[in-house]
Image (cartoon, rainbow, N blue to C red; front, top):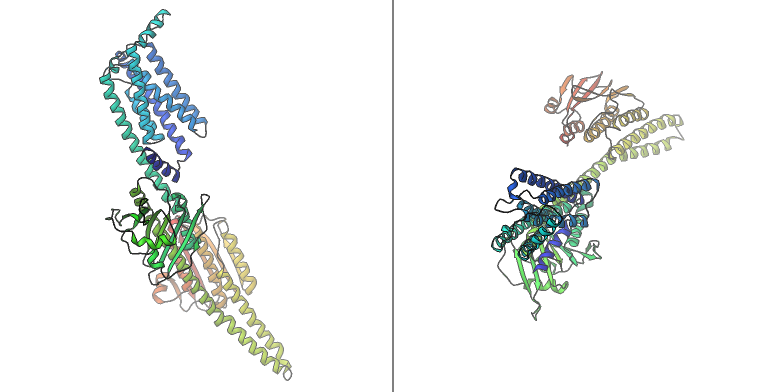
Length: 610
C-alpha cells in the first residue's frame, strides 16, 4: 500500500515537475522564516529567561542557529539553483535543532516548540505528506533518545565534565522528557505532520493538475488544423499516462462513417497519428452505447473467459452502478489489452467520439484519475472546437474569396481578352484592305491590355497578406503611392508628419488596405489628374486623408459615415474596414471638382481593435 501511494505521488510529479525557480523561492522563504523564528525565540528568552535558567549553552546554541540561518540565506542569494543535497543537509540540521534546544526548556510555555512546527512545515513545503510524517517520526525518535539519555544520567555526566574544567553547566531540565508528557507530544507531532503533509500534497497535486491542463491547452494551434491539434493533445496524454497505445474514434453528427486513428508510444515518445482502415463494425466496436463519460476496465486475472471489471463515471463525476463489460469484447478482439481507460468528447453539435488509452500507468486513486481526465477533456474541448470552427470558417472564406476572384477574372480580364482576341481577328482581316486603320486599332488594343494589367496587379495586391506594423507603415504607404503614380500616370503624393507612429498592427494593416482601395477607386472612377494621401495625428486621433481632383461622388457636401449608410452611398469596402478599427469616415464631395475621404481613428490600446 505504501509503494502504491508513493507511486501515485511520483506519477503526478512527473506530469508537472516543479520549476527550479519555484524551489529556489521556497528555500528563500524558509531561510527567512528560520532566521526570524530564531531571533524571536532569542527575544522571548531575554524577556523571560526563567525558562532556560540563564544557560550559557542555550544562548550559544541560539546564536549559532541564527548565524547558520544567515549563512543559508547568503548561499541561496549567491547560488542560481538549490540542489537536492543542499536541501537535505539543511533539513537534517533543522530536524536535529528542535530536539537539541528543547533540553534547555521546561514547562508548558516552551519557547522552542515552534521549531518543531517549522521543520514539519518545511518538509511539507519541500516535498509532501510522507516526507513530513517521516520528519515527525525522526523528531519523536530524537526526543525519546534524549529521554533515555536523561534516564541513563548522560547529561549529569556532561555537567560533571564541564565542572571539572570550570565551565558553566548545561542547566538542562528533565521535566518535559517524562514518558507521559513525551508520549502526548509525540502524538501531537505525528498528527500535525500528517495534516500539514496532506494539505501540502493536495496543494501540489492541484498545482500539477493546473500545469498539465495549461501545458496541453498550449498544444491547441489553429495552423495545425483539427487533426494536427488532436495529434499533439493525444500524444501528450499518451506520454503522460505512459499508455502503450491511444485510439481516437469520432463521428460527425450528420454522417454515418466512424473515423478511427491510432498513436503508439515508442521509447517514451508518441508516434505520428495514423488513420486506420474503416470497417463495418466500427460503430459497435468503438462508439458503443454506455452512459459513462469516463471509464476504466481491467482484466480479471483469475477469470477463465478473460472478462473485464468496469468502473465508470457519469457526467457529474459520480460512480455508475456495476454493469457487464460484454460490449468491450469487440474492442478486445481487435486490440488486446489488460487495462483500458476511455473518455468521451463532444465538439458542439458536429462531432463526438471517444479516446481509448491501452495499458495506462494509473495510480491507486483510479476514480480521481478518471475525474481529472474528465475535467481535462472538458477544459480543452472548447479550445479544440474553436480550432475546428476557425478552420472551417477559413475554408469557407477561402472558397468565397476564390469564387470572388474567379468572378472578377471572368467578368474582367477574361472578357477583355476575348474582346481583344476578336478585335485582333478583325484587324487581321482588315489589314490587307484598310491598312491605315491598323496603328489606331493597335493603340486602342494596347490601352485595353494596359488597363487589364493594372486590374490584375490590383487583384494580386489584394490577395497578398499584409505584414505592416508601425515601423513599416510610413514606408509602405509611400511605396504604394509611388507605384500608383508610376503605373497609372496620375500625379500622386504622400505626406506625413509622423516618423514612426505608435500604432497597433491591426490599425496599420487596415489603413494600408484603405489606401490601396482608395487609390484603386481613384483610378477606376474619378478620372483625376492628381491625388494626395496624408497621414497625421492630433487631439488623440490618427487621421488619414485621400484627396483627388476628379469627378467626385454623386452628391454635394460633407457626409459622415452614419449619413452615408443611411443614404446607401460611399465605398462599401472602405466603410467596413473603418468599422473594424472603430474609426470614423467622412466624405466631402464636389462633383466635377474632386472628393476628399477622411478616416479618423482613436489612439486606443491595441486590445480595442479587432
